[in-house]
Image (cartoon, rainbow, N blue to C red):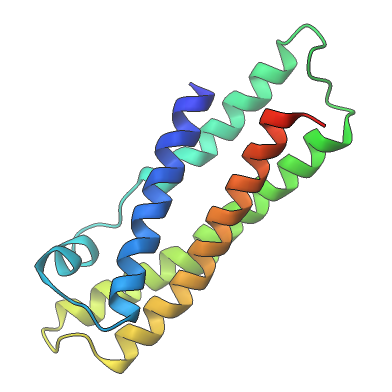
Length: 140
């Protein structure tokens, strides 16, 4: 469950970053408009239960993973920071872009600015998730 949540959540995050990139570049085709004017996708939020499943897996690992190891804490902090980027930066930007695109005015300067802000937050979240995942795989 942990790995599936990470993969699906990271892919969902990457898709959202891709759509934010399209709006930031001035693209507002039908698919982009549908993505933002509907309810925001929930796939990036699968990263949150994935983190919980990862903790459960570590606790049940018969000491193959120990919570006192530094890399475990660093990965946890990276995961937390990714969640902050998603909830405090990317999700509000998605809602703002959706509202602006729903107004029917096309891709305005405001929509592009909101998309770029969301792109920074979403890109940071994706980088943090990938870094945390690399730590979990390598287990230095």
